[in-house]
Image (cartoon, rainbow, N blue to C red; front, side, top):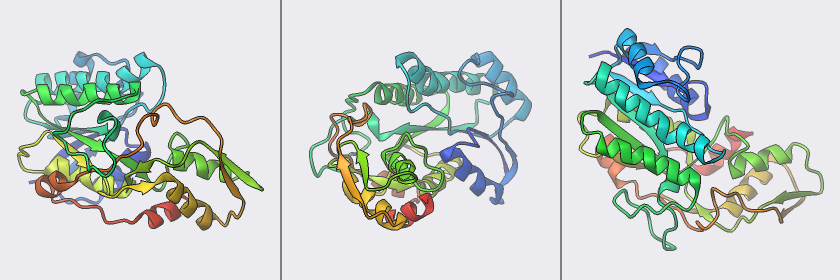
Length: 286
């Protein structure tokens, strides 16, 4: 059965890849991608969002918007606030629709070295960013009147990556670097997952038949030193200078030295697994 899909954030890093997949998906009869001029989710009321939903009548609502930086208010509005608005609007206007939001591995906070984080592990975020996403995920878990899922995305990389991510920042600096590249500490272990694999998981979540789980990890299932990922990037770009770890560490990454996803639930519920290796993601970034 073909579906009407409503995608928010279709021009962003993650949303762009989701849109590419949906445009070629035979299960989609209509794809609506409203922009801020149609509905600004940061300022919209649930009633305004419900009016748009009544007009479009989607059976699947995908939210690929979100904030990565800013103050407490900006982060909460951009991540948890948007989830609250859409959950209320869906319940009022299209109660049978599937809702998928994108959360973050930052919701977990610190993990023991070598531990693959599972969805039922305690969530103890150490940053305002992680707290804002955890609040959005908790709303999804509590909203029993809506068929909703929250995908905890680990460290997405690949084409279109912004400079707010450590690899995106390194790529941007490489454009003007000569003898050296100044970065923050690079010893942390991170689970890097290609944005195109993430998009595949989002689409699968939208079409999954009555999933029993509301929170699902999306990662590569493999922890890699950030230093190693930056080395792949510099080698691919042809940079032969020194990488110096002298800059302050980003607030979102502070106090989390290890991050690795347990992706068994994604395999079982979505039939999903990552396919694109980190080396290919780095090439696509350049």
